[in-house]
Image (cartoon, rainbow, N blue to C red; front, side, top):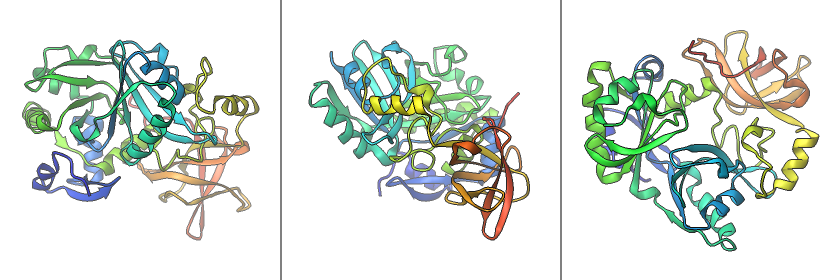
Length: 362
């Protein structure tokens, strides 16, 4: 089991630690509902240093990224980030990721912790013919997500850049918390605003301490992975391993918007055909109409009890106080307002297909 550079800090704070993607990670500190609330209304800090980081450099860097990712990375410029996915050869998804353009011929790929080795091998396989320079820097870098509506105000004293001017999916390389070069990125996973901070492992304790000092008057708190899951689910953001995996296509998962046929990429021909014909199943968002909590793996059924799909993510929404979830259903049941049922043990609990996000902060 790997530790992050901050594991002793989490333990000292009394975090409940659990194994996650091969890492010893804080799942909660004071409880998921209180932590969820902190991020929705104030400011909280997640240690997500288990995420993977690859540097792709050199004159062939863009060619490699264009080959292995579905989005059009040629649209990137220095200071911008892009959400994308890596299709496999059989119609599924190797991983979803964020691509940052750091310099003219330098890109940072941020991948899911559980897929670091798989992703590296997949990209390397295609790089044999392309010849970009690749470096896996996952073990050297830490990542903090400072999230919530008070994040800008709470963190402004720690940097010389105007945090309010960093737009969503943009970033700067600047001074932060007494460290000269960190990536400050507006690429959050909670839907409540804020930043992600990339720094070296040797720097992260200083950053953490200064973040909590600066945020004290704003009620800043450490937040665990359990609240990260409820926050992202209220926004309808996919979680790899639950909502997308090696068997789900970008079009089934509602990720057609990051699948651009302006270039040739892995399995692009088959995916173009699928786009034309339409997928046979789709990932939908639903909310329960009666009390209950939908869980990963529960059956989704029609009025007669016939199975039409499976729940991929589900929870009791702390913001809405009702059961919400994502799941794949056959396409005929995928329209908004369609009634469906979630099989919770012996009960068929009525639910309705809804439009995302579940949580609207206006």
